[in-house]
Length: 232
Image (cartoon, rainbow, N blue to C red; front, side, top):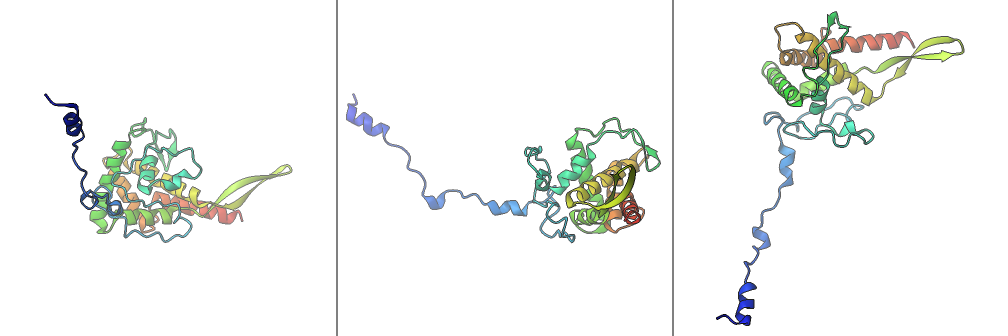
């Protein structure tokens, strides 16, 4: 039989912890080297527009999906990766009206389907990378800078008269309009056509990136600037 002293000594025998030097250490620097979809780097992307620099978030992520947990915070959109904001802009239902001469009725085919829109953006970036031989994230940033309007018009009532005046646009709204127009242009380009929406999105990003007047987002931006200039 084992006496009480032997039992206490046997139960207290535990495996000694490993030394501190041999313990695994988390390397947080690896998160800075993450590639978008495992292919495209963020480190070389530059933002030329100083007003949009604080709103174009280029935080390295592999798959742009954060579920917008901090949506109730003020200016929380600035903390979301710019690729995810493009994905969110594509998740829209049909407009039900004529936009650019086309009746857009998608019947919610992309509404709420985030994984499907992520695959669309991934395919579009592959097309942009093959045709331009450059980083598609950089091409998207150039497209957003070129298609972001600077001024807008608003109506002001003075007494019994209503006049239209030009107002400056905030950087957050400029970026919102640019993302909306690029996403809407991809839906227009693929609506009732044989072209896939990924190809239409890639064409719009490339045309807006080189400031082509055939781009839908560039046309809307030039029209807003022209109307604001005439209302000064």
